[in-house]
Image (tube, rainbow over all chains, first blue to last red; front, side, top):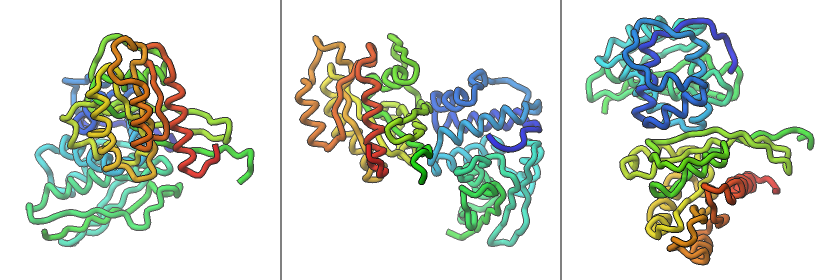
Length: 186
Length: 183
């Protein structure tokens, strides 16, 4: 793992993440990631205070384990990201609110910000993305999260397409990027 | 490249076959040299990392082993599970002929459908320790492996750790050959 590990993460983020793993990879998949992270005790967490926090280092260990085990599983990571959005914001929310809240829920050395907004496109700048900080790992997880979070705010005849321009996963700087979310009529 | 330089590879490998053929037991034996008598079906995907060093070509290989649940209910998500896979162990139980039939009728089809054509696969007849209950003769397995163009055919016993390391080693070597390594 590379980067800074100071910070805290709200428990509701952890439970949403683990629930997403459980839904997509089932119980053994969830356990696999936690085992790789040396955090197997978390597999049965229930009834925890959603507003309490865990240390960012533990959270980062889970994300690193995810990225190791789901190597080259771009679609799977995107799907898990979508489910993570669903479980973190089950009733949907204004996209601007979601961006504000994700920064607050994961308090660490990173930043997510809307830098452009038109009816056809929203651009989100992610600085020091904590979900893709390993070299060689594309940020399909967070892309899935953002696409789904925006999709939920739109009417059913609108479809969101996300793309990262000039993405080079082998660049040491690849965890800084702008995600373009294009809104198309279907 | 300097000949002393260590090469690095990451390979995603799936272990496929019907329920209870011993997929998880093969992986457990390979990873931690242990065997459990009680059978617990895998739920979804059991994913394990193992780092191995291949002296012959001075290479570090990180193996990401996907032990996929044999049950049909996972059919919908299975295509996602295969993404990035470069090799597979196709496992049947030598005491249950239907598990052998399903290799061609089901598991190999799945592998070919979702994995790019350079993917390597080895046919494994597991539970060779139960020879008195055998319904698939070794020769039938060997002939079938040739028919389906498997890279190799090996009978194993996950219970007694017979040929388990060899099965994984041979698959990794075949994958390395597919990546242009002379080994």
